Image 1 (cartoon, rainbow, N blue to C red):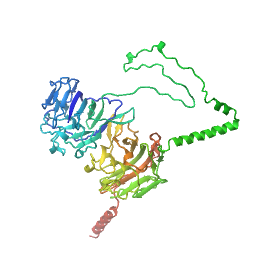
Image 2: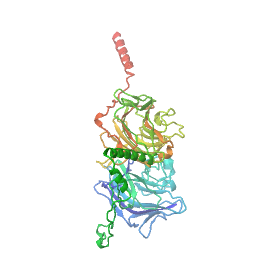
Image 3: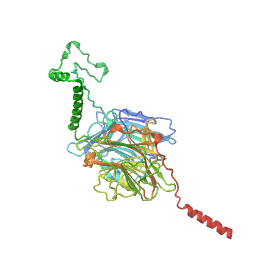
Image 4: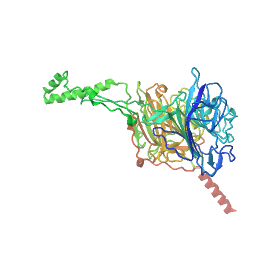
Length: 606
């Protein structure tokens, strides 16, 4: 039980809102799955020449259609959707239908501030949803996990439902493709999410995603932008909390460093002026006395003795540093410009290196599995968090006339033994009875398997110890130039870049076409504690791929890995090996020729 409130809202139709600096969006592509009724109940189909806009800081019932006895505008102007009573539903709609074009793609932007306040001593739940619908009649909707937007009979997406929902959900419902209890999701005509991510925002200041507790009771900002085929959703805290202060340091060169006075204000015009007469006097510089005998002793040494002393001191400093941090993570970095030398490379099953230096995990034949690992285990810290970065270029080339599949996975595991793994949808990393496996997989999957929480066929996912993804998104990348997500067809046969970065708490995954630099916004960000998943500090990194009845050639073209995020080898596109082109199977060609020749011979004899 908890209280749902909206504290402010802004809506604009047909205009593009500038992205909020300092935050990055969970961008999920939704193509051709939300279509307005040709005879809508609430939307007015017009010529598209008018733009609709609405904003409110203090709500009034004159602008809103409010349903439910406990759904109301409180005296302060706050819109209350539910109070902390059980099994409630509340709805609030802008009274006037929004005019949309019948000939142009649907586009709008909205920004609202909400708060979910749980009742003390009770579990908080369930959540708030922003709705777009041709009707304000949600009398069919149910409470609890359906958020007042759907019901149990709408588990399968139905065009007759006609509702787009962006949910802020606090309860985990795996049957709805939820990956976490505290999450944001996009639902189309059904409570089963087509896109879902843990509630978080990307902080440019810290360079990583920061989690947001939806049940904190604090106001949360939400942005929803629809650009016809792509829906972008972003959330962020209402206020920023920053610490201000000073730092100083000494080395072989030393100084006493003081702050004599300080004034600070967030209002540039209201800084308090410093009164110079009240400043404390700075102590005068004085030479250190305790070290003087040592300095005098060194000065009495001969030149050769002084050189020897400096050399011994240098060795002593290096040895001391090693003793100070014996458990720090050993840095490991390597790069494969191509795989011709096969140095430190472990290959099994279908995997092999082609004469060109291309690493082929599988050829375009059915039911294959291929693995390739860096042979040396990576030594991670036994006391600190595991961290690493990798950047690789891969390609999946389907055979002409046959469905392409299944995909490639980047693996982190305490073992290179994947003899238990199966082909097809398990990508050579898991099997149908996977239990107790220790493996992190970042998958580039080309087939839809709803039992693994896949949202569509062409997707990227994060898997931990089993093939059910804990984070998944359609294959796409954020274009800084176009300021939106652009789709990538994994089965295009073209090289695709992949970045996987882990800082000890957050796993970020990005993809992009070959000639595009690393996107400023990751496609997937998910909080993971790999130190708990892998008690063993020695881990192997590599790749797996698999085919089934759907087949593709799976290739790794280039690979860089480092346990230090800043030391990844840059990619030189001009030196990459060319990927083989897709080709039709040739085995049946002689048979076809033989049949044709036989027919010609019999025709001549006749």
